[in-house]
Image 1 (tube, rainbow, N blue to C red):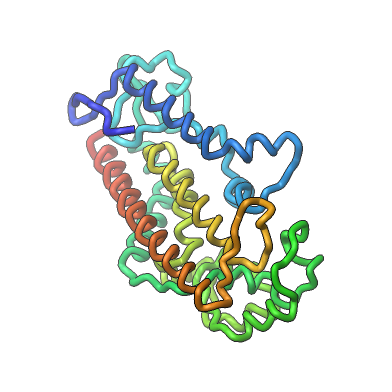
Image 2 (cartoon, one colour):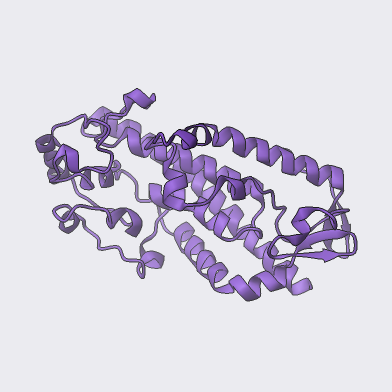
Length: 303
C-alpha cells in the first residue's frame, strides 16, 4: 500500500477506521499470498525445505504474521470495540486504540536495546560477501546421504565431491545459527568461532542469515514495528532462503528451484551478484527498523 493520509492529534497520527481497516486487509492479503504454499501443504504434512524453512526455523505462526500493527505513534480511530483493543501492548484512548509505547519499553526494553545495538553495529561494518553458501556444504561435510538434514532430496554431488568443495574453499561463516549446524569435521575448518555472545561483534551485512534474521527481529518486537516492514522482511527472508538452497549441494529441481553451481567460477559470480543485491535490501530494512525504534522511544517519551 502507499502512504496512508493521516491527521494528527496531540502529536499522535490518527487513522480513520476506513483507513486502518483497509491497511489491515491489505496486509492480511499479502501475507496470505506469501504463505499460500505452506498453508496448503500443512494439513497433509507435506514438507518443503525451501518454503517451509521460515515457519519451522523461526516458529512464528502465520496467524500472528497476518495481524496488522501500525507501529508507534499511530492511533486507530473508532477501534475501542474492535478485538485489537484487547491485544497485548495496546491501550484504549477515548474511542481509539494505540500502542502503549511506554509500557512496551518497560516490558521489552532489553530486547529493544539488543536489537538496536545489533542493527547499528551491523550497518557500521563493510559487507563481507562471497561466502557462496558454503555453510550448507559444511552441514553435510563427512556425512552419508541418508544422514543429511534433507535426506528426502538427492545430493547433486557425491559425498567425496562435497568434501572436496569444503576442503578447497575458505570457510568464513560469521553467523552462530548457521555455524552451530556445521558437522564436527567442518566446524574446525571455519576461520571464525561464532557464539551467541559474539554476535554483536561478528554480525556483518553481507551474511545471508543476518538478512533473514531481520524478519525475526520484526516479529519479536511486534506490535511496535509496522506490519508492512515485517511483511517486507519476511519476503526478503524467503528470497534469501531460495538462494541458500539453490547454492546448496541438494538437488531440489523437483521443487522448481534451479541450482547454482557455486563450485564453478560462473556459479560463484551468479551467487555473488545475488548476495550484493540482498545485502543492499537488508541494509535498507535495517535502517527502517532502527527508525521504527526511534519512533517507539519518541512515542514513549511523549506519554
